[in-house]
Image (cartoon, rainbow, N blue to C red; front, side):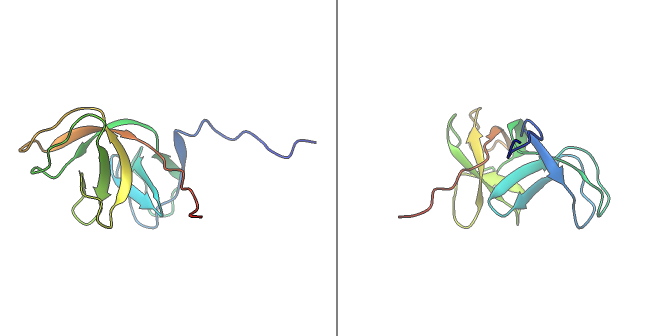
Length: 116
């Protein structure tokens, strides 16, 4: 008998919001940052995209180069190059200079390594 069962490919995971969530909203669950796929009512099970490329709002004063690590600033609903207390969202796959208000981000679920 198998000890494991394949459930899903992993780019989308189950998500049930405690309050209403709109398609495109960014959600932080512990260390995981994802995008709500479709409008959801409070308590309604849906999907959260945790892999793929999305266009996200960014701090307009940030200079972003392709490959830069981006963090989600939940308080201001935008990504930034500043780590601070923000959660890693992924890596930039487009450049976005100062004055730009959005950037393409490759959502990258993080695998955390325990400290020695």
